[in-house]
View 1: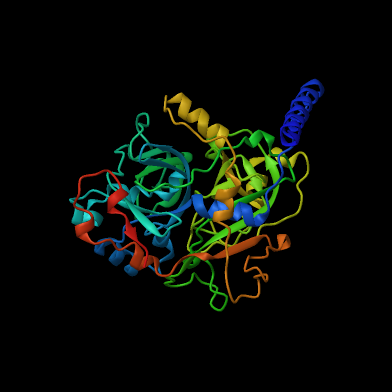
View 2 (view 1 turned 90 degrees about the vertical axis):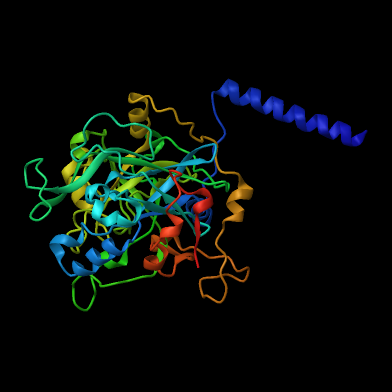
Length: 421
């Protein structure tokens, strides 16, 4: 009887509390997540995207590795985030510039599959899901409206003669046309965590955001020579965080970029998620600040951003913001694009459950950064964390797919997935 009375009392308290909140017009505040919890969500939802290293593409890469004019157009691993699921299909939000037009329409790269390009999407469990039929046949600049196929591009990337839409891959400059957003789809019977979408309008100036992705160390400067590093096989996912310094209305003239922040991102993290403090995706990272040191002419370079505040007038000036800060796309703008073309995707809105976050917390042993419990101790002042439990030992080996894995007719991975060594 006592238990029953207590139970009724708890219910009454909850009921009265709900009435009081309703009368006051207030809603309960959502507790901000720790960096470890944000990293857990990032780890489970961030993917690595790259075209398969066929013999032809590998030869092209090696022959042009030390040619700065060609380097950015050879092989460009990027990042993305799982944002929706339908049946066995997973939809990954990323940026369009992760898909070079040269890779989509150069049939000589894909002789093993009859000229059809194929990519790999590496999920947090180490599996690489093969994605075929990637070419949307829209060219660059894009022609016609997008369709909800394996790859949906709202922009494209090629080498244009300056000031024109004429492509010339021998003398042209690496450029993006359109809105730098894309969706790529893979299939799997496994259950992967889908990242919840948040509201960028609720993110204010000086709020902290978190960017997850896979840096490409080959596009970083060698501290001894000052040139781009040579072949680096090992890759490690990074979580970087910084403060929002500017917001503007998305505009196709600016490729859609509209959220600006301080960070320690690097080339290769393009397409990775931008999280708010509750672990919701509010943006898609894509461009490093123009003040970062360039290496090999890449669209995004490694280095540290200028962290000084801009004035109120500068906070609405795209060019000044882009010079000083890194930038991401706005997911509200992304959703409006989907509505414009009648793409019906069901996004997750509810926060990740605590037990799912706990399951993905990074635990390491025998490292100074670990506490007595074995859990990583994050230092918020560092602004960056390279996850020791999210590593690709040899990206060249991982993305060199064997022909027998590619001869099936399915549009993407699932049972074809390869397991990381």
